[in-house]
Length: 180
Image 1: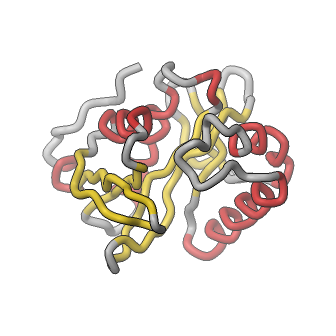
Image 2: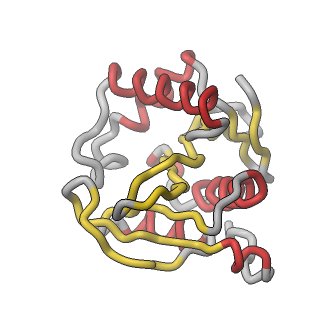
């Protein structure tokens, strides 16, 4: 397991096979996954981990395990993934957080760290987040990471807001740290 980022309260690291149980509790929760087509079963979560491990090897990044620094406990995921949106290649900041920890600022803290890593490490002019229309908590996380709604599209047969932040905003110092 390679550690990627550290924030005030979190560590983001590459997923390990041993993360299956705690990640399954998050991605199989029907409330957490209500804006996905369906919660994931154990085999699908194992595939999720494998896909991200393959991304680390192939492109150097993916979704990372989100750990509470004080306990080392896995509480979610956050990171960057390649997506095709309206025929264009985009880099998305994605995140999931264990439901009992919602509203404590962990997701925005992780998203800001992933945003900063993405702009520092990748040659991209913008980063996006795909947020299902109606998923206001996820939209607020994206907004706290400095994103604004760019457009609304049908993506994978579901209506999504495309939240976006441009590198120029970051370079001009227009972004503030995520509030807790």
